[in-house]
Image (cartoon, rainbow, N blue to C red):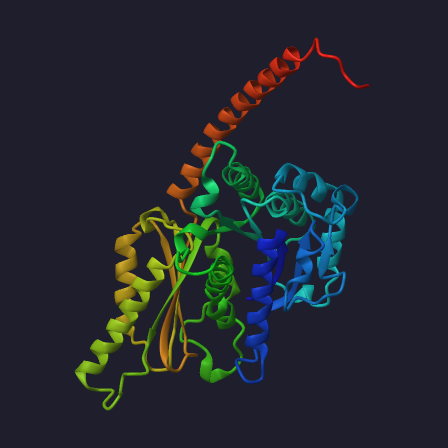
Length: 391
């Protein structure tokens, strides 16, 4: 599957830059010689932020500053309402650059990415998706990053209200919305910068095998049951979560492929990869709430047996009895088994429900706080009313 990736705001642009990096890795002559991106764009109101990426081209067609008249290139300061106003004035520049990109005709879809708690990304992504849907027939997907726990503290937490309003808007227009929960993958002993980079990298790597599988052209690497763009499009709908599990096979010595212990080891490795994938889902869910599931097993040719596939299918059917399950294999990796799991069309996501409930409460508290603040300011002015001024 080939995508155009668009990053909005600093967070979204950083993730888009990671997508560009894995595309460079995939198409390298030393790797798979497969292209999974047709183009990538970074869009922000903060000019300085656009200079910090390593991979997206530096020309003005790929790194786009919007809202310069309003912000003078200095961002919107967490105000996603301002971000929404700016994108409504600037969306034609974005859509024109995307549609005029050199390989857009090869694109299977568009992926827009933003942080829900930011200003520019949170406000811009929903309207941009709406306008893209009006102009193209290809599916438009979104990836929204949920905030860290510390960002949700306080009566005036923009992280919660911004994320809730962003999700509500994006869900109205996007064909599917991947959620990435920062709090779920935060490592307390790491620096903040390392946390952000590692979380972004792990999220992007989840898509690597999935996108490569359908673009593979070498016969020896074609799966017995190929997962391609059609399978992905049929699976992705509504709120979605993606995860990947990997088990190293380097310590396994395949001295006899027919020996009963070999099959037991391989089945155990597949089960372990599935368990890791479920634990690494980008947002915590209960699989019983998924209505569509996609599974891709990637390993050395001959390692994935029919028995292992049947065990994975049986387990998933037990965990998600109402889901349509699509499975495929990709004989690409040599020293590990990798399993990519996509759970889509989710009927219930506790994390999102909690954010919506918190946001409703915060909006009420903020309105009350604003009234009280105005009353106190008026009282202060009244107290000094009889004092002389220096006008």
